[in-house]
Image (cartoon, rainbow, N blue to C red; front, side, top):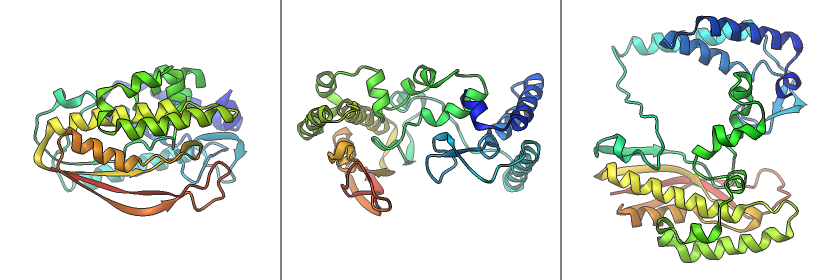
Length: 301
């Protein structure tokens, strides 16, 4: 089991004790939710399992152990201290929050808010860069929300924008259905050429990953989000998208340009791309050597 492979027995016992205590006292109050947050926040620092990269939020790898592991009760007290300090800092500067949190799907949120948005700052999923649903597997397993990897799709992934091959394969998406969608009409010609090439290339790879349907569904979903944003943004609004391009199976996808073209088709007026860094150059990539980039896509009007 994932948890037994990721913790020393004493550590897991301590975390279970903290969990049991929280379950006894939880009452949906802000204080109760912050205790939940503190406990969730220490799950990775107290685990012996390594990650797939340098960031703490990346995939958990039980077979890859790390040297520095925090003691649960000490880590929990530290995390509570951090939260208290943050609250005191903010409360000293504002009497109440100015935030208005809307929990919803970006593809259907236009009916949830008025048309008065001045600015949008977002970093949407990158196509074929990360399975965001799998990133939650560790924490959701601890809290009993899922029993294993097979539960992730129904619990999380099916609610997200399609951005991973796991998502498109599980949904059994059909390429022809995706390409006839009005949402991708502005880029249909070039998109069709790219995804059909992906469909051909996959036949020569053992995994035969569903990159062709993933890329098409990703563009469809992003287009729908842009249409929703156009409905709620002011005519003089500005958006900043932190985004990168992609090359699954070595087939280049100009994602930032496609998003810009979809934005113009949705009714926005101007766009420009500001490159921040090159990608796919730090490590030798066994899959492809296609140069990639990341940057800021500015969309206005």
